[in-house]
Amino acid sequence: MGSSEKRSKDVMSDIPTFSAENLQNNLKVIQNSRTFLSIIAGVLAGIIGFTGLTGFVFYFVVMLITSVGLMAKAGFSADLYFDSWNRVLFDGFLGGLMSFVLFWTFAYDLVHIF
Amino acid sequence: MAEDLVLDTAIRDWVLIPLSVVMVLIGILRYFVSKLMRSSPTPDAKMVKEGQVVIRARNLKAGANFIPPKSFRARRFYFSNEENGLLHVPKDQAQNPQAQMFSDPNMATDMMKKNLSMIIPQTLTFAWVNFFFSGFVAAKIPFPLTQRFRSMLQNGIDLSTVDVSYVSSRSWYFLNLFGLRGLFSLILGDENAIDDTQRMMQMGGFGFDASKSLSAEKDGLDIIQHEWALPRFELRAESVLRKLVQ
Picture 1 (cartoon, rainbow over the protein chains, first blue to last red):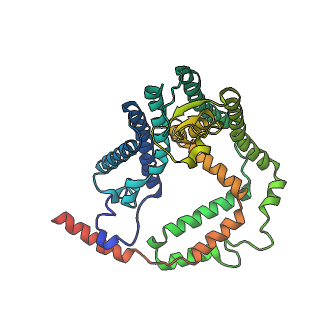
Picture 2: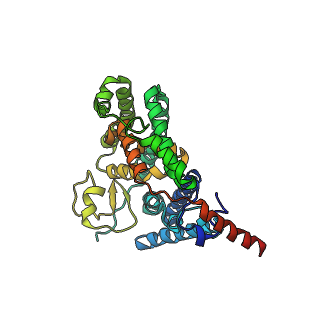
Picture 3: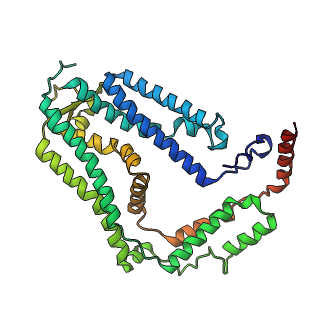
């Protein structure tokens, strides 16, 4: 992961040194965990019976928790594993939204509508 | 807002759940069928060679700053000089990718197979949904939407008084089609998603044009600004050591 390369940012900040494959793998992990959590969040929101804005707020909260969790996993030093913080915060955010809405609708219908 | 519709539980048991389950199963089936049908492409020696050259040039570009200026220049010359550089493509040799595709029937059938494995299940499921479930109000999305979404969500129901958040079964099919992508990438691994994007690329770019990517790499090498990193690595080593000593 090139852990030592990033230590002294003041000297090395202008030359990026990281392994592209590892970076890709890390991003994939983020993507997967976000998708998984958005599906779980959708089912949860549906069962609890959130409607309207509450559901989306719930999604944001879950994604925020995911971000915090990912950061904790990365030891709060994203520089070691990703090229920027935005990756941890926003990657897979919109892709997960679609799955969230689908599973939210599905669970909500099964439990509350019929 | 219209008052709530009462939906029959039979709709849930016989429309909503079966439709969703079938969509998931068909997605999995499609994945395995396309995996079975995928013929391993017989590599053409020239294509492989060009691909390797491109990869080497890319590696050089990525690691340019870690070698001394002189060696970088030598390597760049090796790749991109005008006479016999590896990346230099003579004008007359650059062939039209379309013509190349027609000369190689294997490529065309392979692409057709891929496209068919995508299109056929989709048309079939759509026809199936249309035939059995047309005109149902199958679901209700738990958030309000504006009238604009009526055509999207109530495809197949021609009632303007129903609240927009009610979803017809045909539209539920579409929602599934887009929303299940995430689930598939989880249960089938990333191969599935990668396949889709590759398919898109093939549809757009109509095959891999070697000469074009070669010259693109050449341009990339030519404009690269070389700056050797080693002198500053000493500074870095110093700071690291200082940190260790502290």
